[in-house]
Amino acid sequence: MRFATALLVLAVATTLHADSRTYTIAKGGSNVAEFHAEDTYDSFDGKTSDVTGTIVADPANPAVSSVQVTINIDSLDTGVSLRNKEMRERYLQTDKFSTATFKSVSVTGPASIAPNQPIEISVTGDLTLHGVTRRMTIPVRIVLIPDGRIHATSNFKIHMPDFGINVPHTILVTVNDEVPVRLDVWAVGK
Image (cartoon, rainbow, N blue to C red; front, side):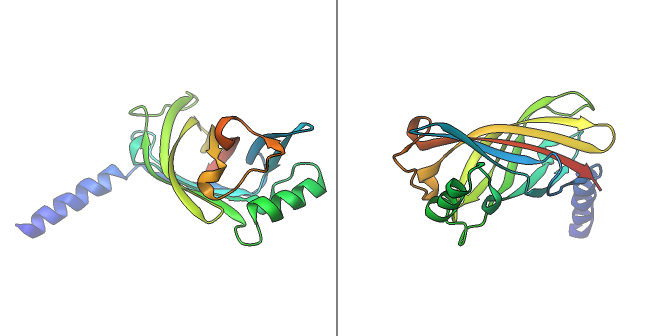
């Protein structure tokens, strides 16, 4: 009887993930992570296209999806080499913490995803930045492209002190030391 039950559980689990597909986020191209900050003199943006990861998704059941994204923060560029150097060395300490990672633990949203129909989902996961891991939920806009790609965009804020990063007093960020972040990725199905 236990063997039959185990087979039934295995069959149900296999069916639940039968239509899951793995999508790869490759470095470069249109993939980008960006942030915005303001100092006492002007505002500035930083960005990198060194974004990689995977999305495992089933359009018929988005709740079983998973996401893992890695951003090379040592490659963030603000357009000013001296500012880049100071940001990397003094605040982000990229010699010790060269990447930021996000690994999902749950996805909530509509019951299914139709091709070319943008949907809004919430992805809860663990963000590791500056050697500190915090759980957070971020909003994500997803478009399933019929040619086998997923386009995902997200705008959220990171409270820098939560990750042991003290924002310098010369930089005026939004309330409570929060830095707005934008993530825009294209993932290609395998």
